[in-house]
Length: 165
Image (cartoon, rainbow, N blue to C red; front, side):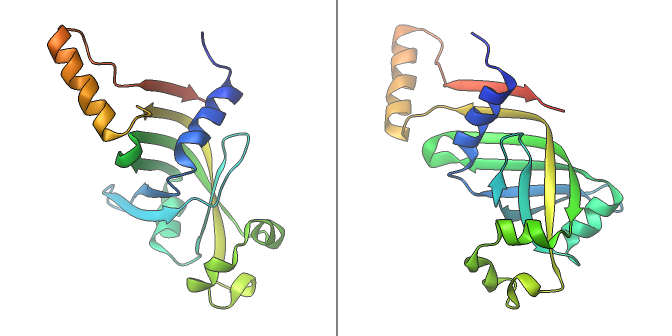
């Protein structure tokens, strides 16, 4: 049974929302890979993913040259992983900042929503892959041993690919 695009996005959200932190990956001026941890603020129903950042950050510098980004999510304890590729847009909308603001962000933006360096990055998902074994390490280890003993191929869980935009 194949899932609709909306069902696939919901499945992806279920995997990445508990993770929160991703490696936000860009290319620099010399086409070298740059990755930095960033907190996912919101995953919209259409698959857009939102981040707060500093308007003068390395991420903003990189996406101003090439707006393609890769987001890598990993939760080994839950055996959940995702890779998202999309195009980024810098958003300066005060209304959107107010909508997505959380008081914990004051640790990075002491002036709050009025911080002049505060901006958003919206990543419009183009494609994604996800892996979700859905079991703890002990159960997975037991299933690996069972596959070896029965000479069957180990079923490492659910895997999906999404093409959005």
